[in-house]
Image (cartoon, rainbow, N blue to C red; front, side, top):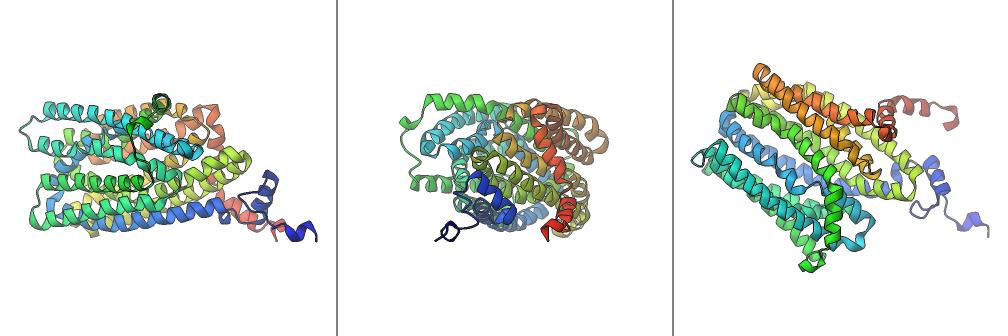
Amino acid sequence: MSDRATTPYPPDPDRATPAEQDVIEHERLPWFTQPVRQVLVNSSYLLLSQGVTLVLSLFASALMMRKLGPERLGVLNLAIGLVVLVLPIVDLGLRPLLVRRLTLHPEESRSWLFSAALMQLAAAVVVVVGVFITGATLWGTDSPSWLLLFVLVWLAPLEVLSVFVGHFDSRMEGKAIVRGELAGAITAAAGRLLAVWLLPSLTVFALVFVLGTAVRGLVWLAQANRQHLTGRWETIKKSQAADLFKDAMPYLVASVGGIVMLKADIVMLGSMRSDAEVGQYSAAVMFYDVAVLLPCMVIRSATPALLKLHKQNPALYTRRRQTFHNAMTWFAIVVGLAMGLAGPVAVRWVLGKPYAEAGQLLGTLALAYLFTVQGVMVSVSVLADNLQRYQMATHVLAALLNVVLNVLWIPRFGPFGAAWASIVSYALVVYLPLVVYPAMWPILRSVLRSFLAPVEFTLGVFNPKNT
């Protein structure tokens, strides 16, 4: 019997040599291979979760916004924005590092997770104390905003429970993430609906926000316990904690810079303009964040597979990365255009006439959608190539630019000035490091080439060699 008769053809993608991988690439559609199937299955769980979560959250949030009105919504979101502004300090930039460590060294999952959790718990204590002092200085302990801050600050220690998401992501266990997110979303949505009908107080809405986060984290903790990831503190290794802290600094700086670009505008808008304008802007940002969730889930699911491929077969990784960039770039272009055209009508239809300005703001923010998606997309390549140090200075610069532009434009243009400051900052944070640092030029070429994907596809279809 011939070798051809006994050897499967094309070969199994998981056992193929580099040469056989090339055969697979040319003779089969790349997104039918096993790693991509795993990404699609995992993404489907995450997207199903996000779909249900979004429906619940949008319905409950829309009723809450209608009940509160732009001004009271602005007071609530100003307090939320101040707390969210410092939450990256709790994360310490460890999540992408954990995904990488646990993907490449799954046998040491417990020690890596506990080392990260201890570091984040210490950071949470610092954040709680800092927020209390800041709130008392800004508003005084007798202010209603101080009470909201007192409730919301407990999001910081609850954020530590998100450390287990790194483990679930590294194993592409979308179901585990889904259970926590659905439990938290259902709790938060039910709490908002009860508050709207029974006690529409800002403090109650803040408590519901914290409660949903707590339920989500506890479900993740329970699943980690079933996988025997929880245990005694003796599993912590000081060397791993030191290694994580050293490597996490660029991510921490980048995370702080990113959250400054996302949330500083709300805080600055509240200090320079009216609470009603904060409410309009935060309503637009809510719809924008909903649109960003879908590509983020796909990118998060693809990260472990791309990291493994980068280590095992760099040539194939380069080709898969290009396919990945093509898909994400054109998804962002299409959704961004749809958001710009239909967003104003959708916001007014969902929230009513009092939020008409929020719809116009969403149409403006749509210009930033491409840069937002490409920023998350590029972060995977940066992680795989260990180039995160090049992004640190850029994130700091973009965050500072965002603050300066907000100072200049918010007094004159109001929330639209904040929107344009975000657009400029997002573009800078994506493309400046790709242009400035030669080590990142291969990623830049891949990103720029992704804009030509329809042309390359058309030429490939009509190429005589493919007929």
